[in-house]
Length: 372
Ligand SMILES: Nc1ncnc2c1ncn2[C@@H]1O[C@H](COP(=O)(O)OP(=O)(O)O)[C@@H](O)[C@H]1O
Ligand SMILES: [Mg+2]
Image (cartoon, rainbow, N blue to C red; front, side, top):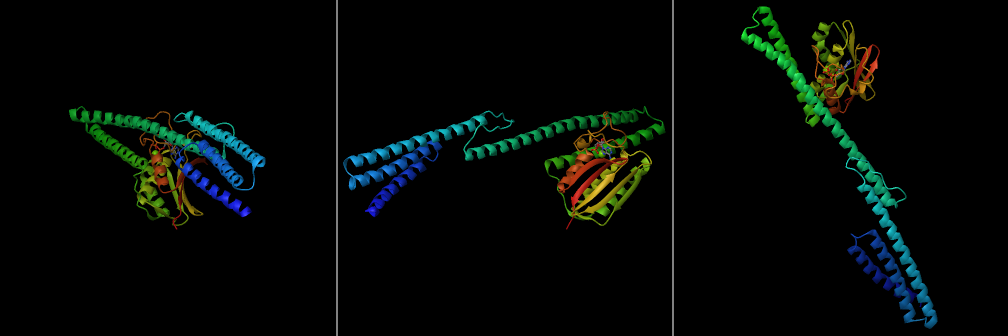
């Protein structure tokens, strides 16, 4: 008997469940509310079908049968009602989430709706918050880069125009024979050559920087000994140091192999050393030190510049940043690209670069992974 009842209700249940699953599949793009309602209807239908089949077919007749059917029907209706209310809540919660999304301005912050949400919607809310935050940071970075680029173009065109005007004036004076005494002619020629050197250096820096920014800086990396690289860099700036009467000292505690593009890394080191010499007064010392620290190497350049103003410290690596308020370049004046280039090169080598004020001046430091 019991077995028969089980078989009949399980059979009917299976049929209704398959119908229900098919219906849910058809409705799978519809609201979760509709799906919950379908689930409730299926539950009620399966229960009712079983009860009706059993009561009709066998045991119960008359009053008892009506009582059973009524109780089951009311139970089903209660279940359906609760399911519908629950579905409504889910729908309302998802609408709150969508409304919160509608409130976000394109570059704004996403604030998840107040009050409790079902766990899955809460997770979606958090994910959205993080996605919007990333978007906002990206846009902010884009804006700063863009304004730095605009500023760079403005300063560079200024920096190019001034020496060009001077060269033009000197060239015209030479051409017209206005400057004809041999001393002046010689001076003008020298001056023009120096300006041409400076301008080509600047154009070269701009090209390097644009390659760094465009991500097209191609490093050809080999095992390079940092000690040799430091020695070469110091040899290269020797004339400048002698002209400024600045003492140079270099030390490295071993060969210190790094995987680097020797040309590019030398350029970064040279930019630091040239800056250090330029900002150190006569009879001051610039010392370059390379040491191994765990699995990194640290190369630092210490000068006697008297310290960089605290406010400027975080900005010295920015493109076109130059400390002096008056931005007329001095005899060795650059366009404020040297440190931006150094940072670009070091970061392309998976390294880090930084600066702190220390002792009589400041200390620029490059850290690179030690080659295995
Ligand atoms: N060794 C240093 N000592 C003091 N100030 C420095 C030093 N190196 C860089 N700075 C500051 O950082 C600025 C940016 O340097 P850099 O990018 O090399 O541009 P530039 O040398 O063309 O001015 C410099 O103008 C200067 O104000
Ligand atoms: Mg410089």
